[in-house]
Length: 501
Image 1 (cartoon, helix red, strand yellow):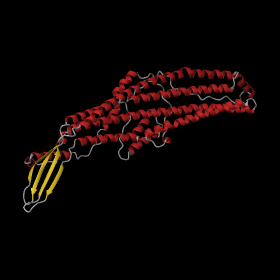
Image 2 (spheres, rainbow, N blue to C red):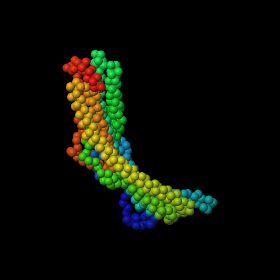
Image 3 (spheres, rainbow, N blue to C red):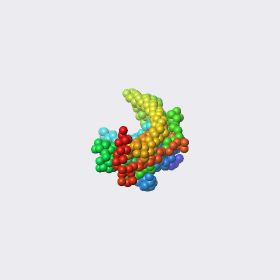
Image 4 (cartoon, one colour):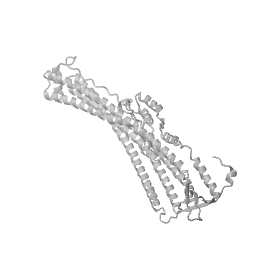
């Protein structure tokens, strides 16, 4: 709004102040840009290694749903699962609205309180008296003086909100990767146990044939059937263990129904070396957004405490202009007005005590977060080292021994020195060694995802070129049953008895 200089020049100082306040108020009528801070949030996430597209859903979000559906139509690797979650996770989208709230609070902090218009009418008393009318417009002077402080506090709160929301983005990405590793590991373990169950079925079938021929006792038959039943029970348990991580991943991605997506098979090989604990602790101190948000919260509280201390003795002051007119007169009597709050009883003692307590709580909370972060980082790095040692032992010692036992057992079986059951048990033990190795690899990657969650940023994976790839688990082939080119049942029973001596 433009004002005529000739008109404003004739106004009294109080009237010019009122018009100035009106101009500020009208300037605040523009719509609130609630999404103005979103690029800063995405920038913070990108600085911490996020490579996926981050989007704030608007309206129906049809385009984002279409992009997510295109990813879900194909088997998902860990990074594709993160992208789906960033597009569809409703909790993350709710966090973005915190930006809009903080942005609106910042705009509100720069606005003046609306002026107060009051009017009164005093009726005539007595024959010679006449009615009198009074009008008054008042504006809080303290509110005007506190605009800069309110703006600084609200601006600091907006920065804190940006840090917290960006932290939610980074944390969700790490949680999705961990959930993906859990699903992939559970799937591979089930596949291993399917092989074990297949071998157990073959052993039980062979035992039935021996029993029908009269070459196997009821006790031995029951023992073989119990082994087969146990193998199937472990397989069923493994399939049950797939349910929770699969549903957890679906929930993080904002997908309704666990059957609406599949994942890429196979865990990645272990990296060439593990991250250094000291480097990770330093990285967490610089990159963990929860720490930065806690420090920013302290800045907000200090600013609020300093403002309250500076103005504690300055009560609310209202300035304005008043006009009065008596009935029968043709003119108004106009003059300034003012009111002053006297801080006799409320001297902001309670407010200051509350702000001081909040500041101390914030400082202690930041210390607690720092302790938690350091502990999480040390735990994750130590777990990585331990899981690497376990996987290396499985891969370099136990699995080769199991493979050698199977090879030697096959030779002895060919020379009729052991029976079929001994060979099948050796093959089952070999497969179970593969299972334990895969479990160690899965737990390593879960610890790696926990490390990225603790650090608050992506951790560079060193090339795995000098590390053995994941094992290619051969499906154990059951030995042939008599009648299909195998040794006679009597000989097979002899082998079994000899192997048990």
